[in-house]
Length: 489
Image (cartoon, rainbow, N blue to C red):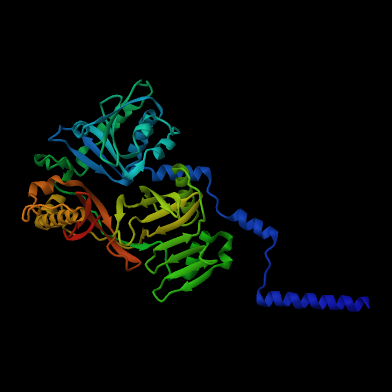
């Protein structure tokens, strides 16, 4: 009888084993669960701090060689060549973020007087809170964070000992002076570093519109022929196995329970639960992640920033040359959080695109300790020959001349629209007219970038473009062909 029971048990065991092998019915052991959890990518403090320092770098540097208010000479240092200047700048700035200062609001003329002498001017993302770089120096409560909410520019004079200048996102200028001058302050090295650079090897920028009281810098000519380059999106729906591996990290160990949908548009949607988590990847490579966060309580800015960095590092990672572009407080269903926008550079130039596609290449929203939304559309250089048109880069002042009437008309239309929205009324025939000098006076910034022309294909050609900020709006012009490409708010 015992033999018969043993045979029956053995037969049942064989049948169950056969079913498991043929139907692939697997039960996850506690050991496997522990291994899965252990293998999940955890962001180390070292990697987090390294990434934080990298994305808080300035977008660009304007190097001033002096010459006086009406005859100063400058050049733009692109993102590839920025690190040695920024490292030297941080050593100096550490004293200003950790020691007692005399902080004074100064007129624009005082700032530009310093700008016309030898100096380094670092440009940061729009509205960068002062507390983020302060945390980098280990001093959250200091004279800078107490007086400034944001930092747009930092100007370091080469010879004006103990003093630097800052501009915030609202356009207010500040003069910061150390009350005590430390002996170890690295100012002499800073001056030497500036003076050793040969100005002849850089594209020269000048304040060409001082006759209309505008100090904006433009090059008379641009001697370097910046190429057009072929790029492709980092996400590829055409390779499903690779796409699955990239998307897997967003769901952690829950990926086995994720449902995948292929849309007729070519998009792939990955869903977990009933809308708890979702990842959508378009055929062009745009990725959008959404998740239910519940009633998350608010968190402080630095904590939210770290959560955003950790999330991106665990998933797609940052493209080379990434930098913090903008920080915005947000509120949703009574919960308060932060939206962080990041840009990135290719070959030293910022990559920009139509805002209707995505206002920034990387956008992430944080509530409490959770990420509610993440959107990204980034490119990587393909292994194809670059295109360098023989005509080279057209100077921006020539583009202003070629499109002068169109720019005037566009600016006038914007002014009319603003007056309609505010309900202002003036005599007809007078409110729509502005002078050419007024147009030149309203040019705020001119910089060379890479323009991502379309969002309809995964593979594109990036073209060099002059971005001109005029009265708060950004105008883009093809730097090779001179075509007006777009206007963005």
